[in-house]
Length: 490
Image (cartoon, helix red, strand yellow):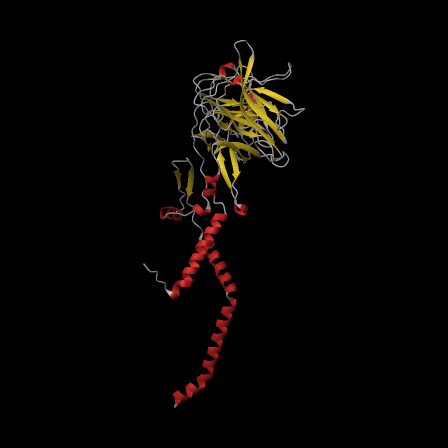
């Protein structure tokens, strides 16, 4: 079929085609978040107990994953060996070892070992990392030990990772600690082999990695989230013992009764009790035991505050009853909760954060900070020792929300004050709609007078011109009056 062209429209069509091609080029140059996300390789680890994440700069940690269909019933048979050189066979290389915790790891579950306390981010086992990784280069090997029939110790090599600030090692061009303390590396499947991807640890959410997708000046950060339980405790505590150490060193231990149990969870705070002078006795922090067995809090601690923190360690024999709430008052813990801005964390004996509250802002008298369905709310009904009841205080409407119905206007004219609470079915948020008192007539008159004066000032030149034209016309008419009178007399 022949193509028919319309001469008058060719320039318009050409203009549209150029516009479309320009937009397409811009979209190709700029990384659109929705498109960039698809380019970020997802986490994936080889079969077996494998290294999934490693952080060698700043606050070091390592994440191992059981990538087998079977459970690992004895993690303590595995050892990590860290070398201070990318080449473990080089002359003068030193090494250190750490035994993995005495615990079980189900298929698909993860083990987190961190040098400093951090959120467990969904890891089922959490413990202290006693190894130290070199910033400029290193080599880490995971191996399983066993006894031969003759009683000799055998070692089966497992997963390995090496890194350096140069062009050697599996991970290359590693940024130094002073340049990029947020740098983290995670494993992903690249064709038939497994490679490593650099990411940045999100300082606002330690359970999230931000991966920069290449795209020139228009590149944007895409998100690769880690696993974090939203409505349940983030970790199952199984226990660990730090390897090595001096004989006089006090090594943290998990109470034997807690092995295999779910972590307790922070459920409610009362930062500002009603009345004066009672903050030192009536403030409380509430914990919930989700297990059907008692939970031993011996060696666990509460950490309160943001810029300045205070801690309280539970003494020996402190027990949480099964499936119950328990409030710990400031008279006992000596913890002071700020009335302006703060939060609370629960730490295990190894200083791992196993539960934390959301940070709150200004706390009013008698208002509690409570957890419900995975979210934290203010509630006017504190419930120490029992399940939370979220009864939110009234919230004044903003100017953008202050449209009144005809009914509320009528109530305002009568001088009545009406209040209606509306609830959101999903978030449980409450809003207050308040009809204001009637405005006095003198106030309206004053406002109207001000508006008239302002209008007169703004249009003073136009008004002056109109007055001049009016005076000119009146003067012309006066000049013609004698002639008109002469005509009438004739």
